[in-house]
Image (cartoon, rainbow, N blue to C red; front, top):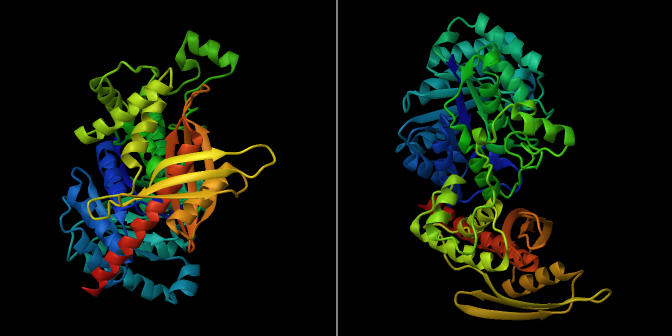
Length: 521
């Protein structure tokens, strides 16, 4: 049985999803989770893109063990230099270079002949091998490249020293049949194809990224490039959890396996959803909340008689817990730490202390504490502020609010915030509803020139005492910032979420200062 390598690009391509940007602390947390998940290769970023990207790749390379860490680079020496420098501390470094090979890209984007295209591939791979033995070459837009030209590109890249050659469906154009035929043709026509691993990186524009990736595996591909929750440009990438579980569940078809520790899929999915603010749809395959839920009476009857009547996987195979209600106000720290570990979170002493305080507060407000409540507390209290050791710890926080509103009348809010140990109070009798009034008050107090782009609130669990989970996107000067908060008081959660986004603006401003200082040096 072949082992298919899983190449995760959540930190690079996944972060390119609008509104999904992560700060350094969040990237490191996701990188460590990916390594624990068993991912073979972690694409940490595009080192030459900015000083911030370079720093992210370097820090991920420094801390990750057990997985290869790679940086993307164009077929340009300065890009390759930056990638090599950022990967110096990696246990298993990989430089990933790419060049478009399709006629439309060669003519309109690169202004390059087919022959010069081949030469550029050879030169770039030869140059990259000076720094690193593990080189991946990607033929961007490979599925719209002429097959004869693509065969020459692949042969050239392998001859120059590429250990992996990627055949990406960059715009999500290929059908599964076409992808199977393309990989099969390469396997049959490229004479040195056995000297490298063939990979695919398929986008989901037509909703077929997982299907085309699996077709490539059937044709002989040995690596699949994907992201947690299918994040990525436009409609996203091949979903890691879906392709992994398809290979595992239908090993009779694919005759293959992966190194992924599948019970960690749901915790990793939730972590990525939290740090990016892009929630997983309830009906998403494998990790969605409804993936193992049954409402139909016929289905429920079958499940009671034999679960395999309607489930082809065990919930525990992917990380779902069958027992949900486990803790209450009399539970101690040890029980909370154990439940957090079961849900995929290793809390250190400081984190446990912080979450435990909030857990006790919640237990006094709610009759029943569910796993989703615990997850929300962890996400709120560990990921709530975009701080790390390299950034300011001075952030805006909520002290108190007083809100009065009635049908047909304008709301009145008195809001008190704290910043740098000083309190600021503002009263506003304006706004289209209480949330708008809160937003206007925050904007006045903080002086942030922001506008509300998206506002979402949903219950974490059932019941009238359920916590409200608020996710917001705000806009400042064309940039989008995410805020997230949870509370049984939805007004409080909304206020905290907006402040969370404002604090991200402060963080980015500081990082820009650091980046320009880095460039000057």
